[in-house]
Amino acid sequence: MQSKKPDAARLDKIVAEARRAADQRESGYRERSLKMYPWVCGRCMREFTRANVQQLTVHHRDHNHDNNPPDGSNWELLCLYCHDNEHSRYLEADRGAGLLSADVAPATHNPFAALAGLIKKKD
Image (cartoon, rainbow, N blue to C red; front, side):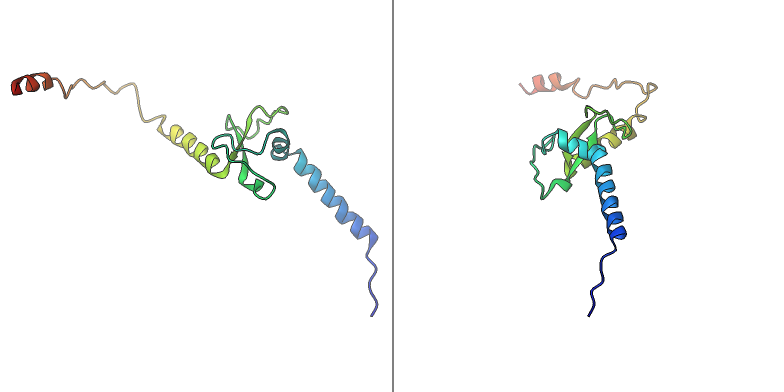
């Protein structure tokens, strides 16, 4: 049985693609933030290791995913749960922003106005 010799050009191409992909990942904001900050959730303070770092997300503080300053000032590391909570709070606040309007008159009824009189009657 003859063994095939590996095609050197093909192997070089595979290695080059792998290196390019690694360089691209490292230049992304996730990899940069993981190098900059300790692997701890910024909200619940849960610590992460290489075994579970995929559960740590990069949250953009101003919710603008195009705002990626080189110093990382718009990022914070959050676990999946805290990250989901942060975005749901943001969405809820955004949905409720238009509910109240200036046309609504303030409440004038005081439900406890006669309470003092009722208490005095019992004495």
